[in-house]
Image 1 (cartoon, one colour):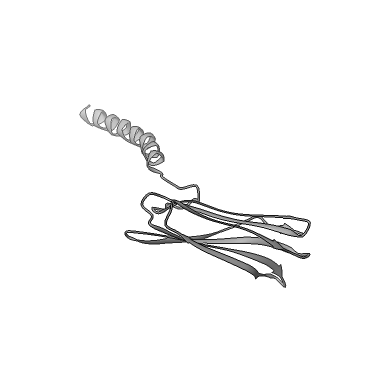
Image 2 (cartoon, rainbow, N blue to C red):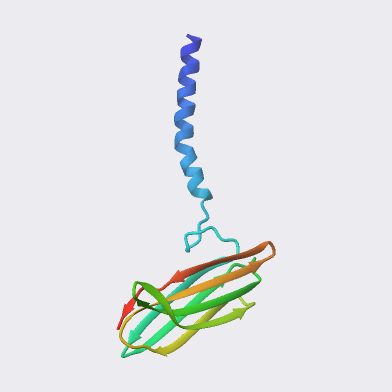
Length: 138
């Protein structure tokens, strides 16, 4: 009889923990909008629009309060012969809460994208990554 009570108690505990563990894990998830758990980077974006041969290039990164400095590079790329080739590139640095690049560039027929690479330094190192715009064909 004692064995049945211990077995029942064990099963109840197992059921209780199997439901509570995923809930605790979900509460502890602190993923950033980038899909990576960064300490110094809050968000980053890269956009491209083309109208009448004029490309609007935008790159952006925002650091967390723990970040100290930002390096940002946006590169306009054209798809050619099966790979992406650099057309033009712009860079900036910042110690403020964010950095951005906004440029206009004349393009000719082809398929383009913007690759925005960012690097944010903090007291314990540097975090970096690259985000890509959607492709645009002109």
